[in-house]
Every structure is written in C-alpha cells, then in structure tokens.
Image: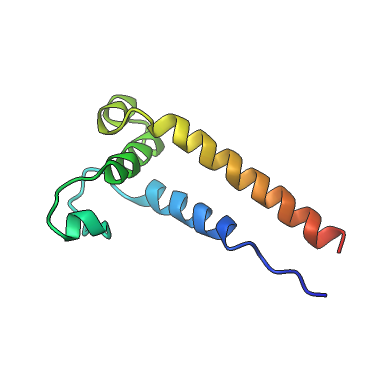
Length: 94
C-alpha cells in the first residue's frame, strides 16, 4: 500500500519558508481576505509579519507587530517536527 503525504506538513513548511524569505518592510501584495476587502490589518497579518521579523532577527519589530509571534513560531516548528517524524515512521514501517 502506498502512503500519502500529510498535506499539513508541506503547507506549514512552505508557509514558514515564505515568511522567512519575505521582507516584512516591503509593501508587497497581500493575500489576506480582510485586507483585500478593505478592512485594514487583521491579527493574522500582524502574526505573519511578526514571524517574518523574527526570521530577520528583528525582535523589537516582531514584538510590536504581534505579541504571540515567537510562541506561535515555536509551536509551528514543533508541529512540523511532529508531522515529519510521524511521516517518517509511516513510510519506514509500512
């Protein structure tokens, strides 16, 4: 039987890679539905910017963007690690 890759693993990993590559100071286009609808910044936008600032070593800017940036980044890294470990065991012992 062929195992499937849990879509959550590449989705979280790709999201963090994009946040690491994104310049948080650039005025890049947003995919945020709230911002596209004209409501301004949403908490999710601040969280994404906060994580991007962390990847660039800008701790103060990260804190100012969203107070939960560092804890959420740690939780996402933990989740990616857990999913990768589970995926490894699925492929290895199947």
